[in-house]
Image (cartoon, rainbow, N blue to C red; front, top):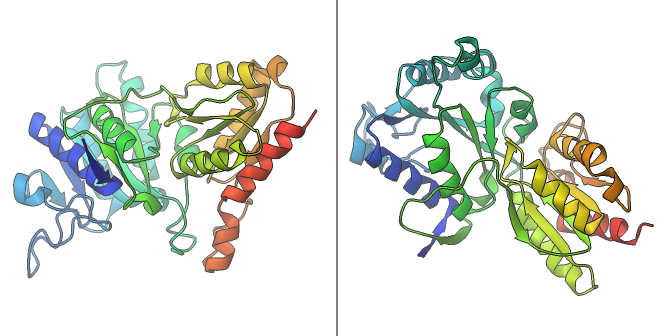
Length: 336
């Protein structure tokens, strides 16, 4: 086992699955890096360099550069999936889902149901999400709640490189469309990751740490901030359980409710918009299925319901911070 960045772990998962199954192919903008242009064909590998090196190994028929038309290549990926291939499409930023939302919402998500199970849609759509790079309002959103709202889509958000590799391999092997969301702020974060292939089941949460005082639920990068906050609060005698939910759909409701039964307190941390958002969904779950176990009101730590600001100082205030998470945990812990 060696340390790998999130970028390296995803690249390794793609390579292993492409070696294992000839039906797996990649499609997206710039993923081969300037194919047809001057200079080295494999010069880039996507906007964050995640697919770099794969074109040289698998060639242009399995690492396909497309024009700047999300509608066209996501539609092509849906069609390929229905006819037996296993495409992995890169959407660059999750913000761009608006361009091809009909293909995602009305085609990929519904075809298996509308055809009575006679067709499968084994499609993975990879995309970046999250703020922290001052990339402004059209390149910094976290839209997992939007995809979670649509029946037929599975939605995955890994919290580190180890999780990303196992979850991506599982997603590629899954027979339903999976929206695989990678936080752009974590691409260089390193984690111990096995060299061999492994899978992590979709819909099973991970107890990132066990505690008896407060349950903290989060996804993606927010899991790491929650663990840092929990480390700080340990010195104050507050012992937290941090649950890495991994997936918003399917959601591991059992793990959430069982932890609430043990701690009696819940904090939900999410980088997505708060109105009709994922944090409010988890809070509603707690109210419906674990209300008698709650000793205090549920606390949510989210951005404000506003567009993500471009100014660095404002973006820093917008994104949930360790200090805000700690304050929410303290308030819940001390609430009667």
